[in-house]
Picture 1: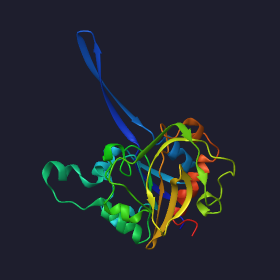
Picture 2 (picture 1 turned 30 degrees about the horizontal axis):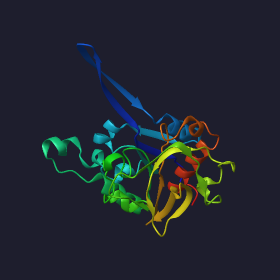
Picture 3 (picture 1 turned 135 degrees about the vertical axis):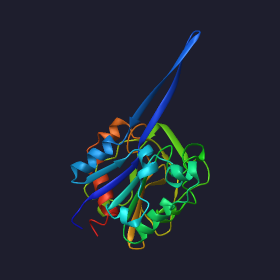
Length: 253
């Protein structure tokens, strides 16, 4: 494969605040993105990154295999299943449109690659609101999900453990201990999965072959708050992401 193209969907949020000052109040709105660390790491490895913030993915995420064919790998990070299931035309106008998570699953089975990255709105997420359990894309991932809030908050920090140092996805990661993380989503590995790294005894990085394609998960965050600066600034951060995306995209078959 000569091209190296990846689509990242999610990693954005809007905060609407109410400020009370005595008798009076006013509101402010702030938009933020958390994709910078991951995008910079992949671009440093020669990847052409297309980024769709959550509100853009709602309308523009690929709905056909032909659209997905523009990429070697798709990364879903911290954006709930409803963003892909409920296109605005379906939600507001009752227009029947393709199930984009089913399209993504079928594309992976035919040779594509997908990675799900953890967060408050991936896997099942906070209050179970991410709602990926039981969706089509779960079938393409090397783990199964719980039907409730699956967060494991570790505010004191918890250090990952590498289980498969020789796996191609981790071959360029320095051998030193990994920095601590502050939380992750709890999932269960499928029997066929390779668990490359664990955290708290649960999968942190897992991979598998799905049909002609590949699926992978990183169950913590690619950015703060679960990934503190010690992790995002770690010398192994970029090699880890470059290796995981390359493996999932089939660059090192």
